[in-house]
Image 1 (tube, rainbow, N blue to C red):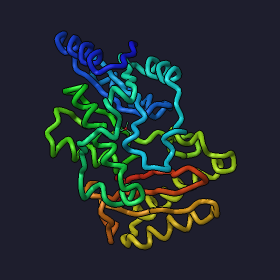
Image 2 (cartoon, helix red, strand yellow):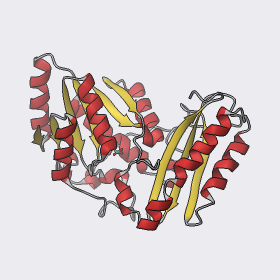
Image 3 (cartoon, rainbow, N blue to C red):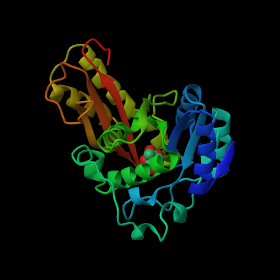
Amino acid sequence: MITVTTASELRDVLTAERRAGGTVGFVPTMGYLHPGHASLVARAAAECDSVVASVFVNPLQFAAGEDLDTYPRDPEGDARTLEAAGGDVMFLPHEDEMYPGGRSAMLTSVAVSGLSARWEGAARPEHFAGVCTVVAKLFHLVGECRAYFGEKDWQQLAVVARMVEDLSFPVDVVGCPVVREPDGLAMSSRNVRLAPAERAAAPVVHRALRAGADLVADGEADAGAVRRAMAAVVAEVPAATVDYLEPVDPRTLEPVDRTDRPVRLIAAVQLGSVRLLDNVGAAPGGTA
Ligand code: PAF
């Protein structure tokens, strides 16, 4: 595996790959890679001739006061993880490479309205414009590819897929299943910040989602009842604060009144300094 830090090096490598007839898989990340990221790289390696992963903590998607400065970083460990998972190129740009003149010099922003407004967008109003702007830039640098995103950030996946559709990027967006710890906690780079007691309590989010999915599978068609059942599970952990815990339409992310069809159960729960995001599919009969 090679590491490149500039857009021109990345283009050179990918141009050579494409001249040789190879297909490109792309995994955008903010680094501090865990087995969830590795699963995206491994899937890309299985489906594409060459795999690029970007490692860039994107300042545009952090609001003032969020954890940009303390976001965990480990580029050497990331290189080892990528290589072991089958990555070929690590793109590790400095902020100046992505935002010449500084991020405040950026006059262009890419925003997907509607889909970005609720849930994470309501809690973090600038977040998805920051995500879409950097992902659009990365897609331009990487070019035609299959791009792999984890389903843990279900709303991000929906927003990026819509951006790709609306702006005709030559990119196939591939959503990949959430990778979990043995106790059900969805893997996330930020989990490292959970204090031991918080880490022990954190699987409550997945337990709540599973309880909701089981109710839907058993035929509960009232979304309010499903929401209340999930909230009751999280309430077992007094330190956990629910931001949202909702049955939504899997594509539009609009809340639903009825759960008599496939839905996505989405959650954001604050535990200490960590915002835990998770989601599961649910359907009557249990086949979402
Ligand atoms: O999911 C992430 O890690 C980031 O939001 C992404 C897609 C790499 C953009 O910075």
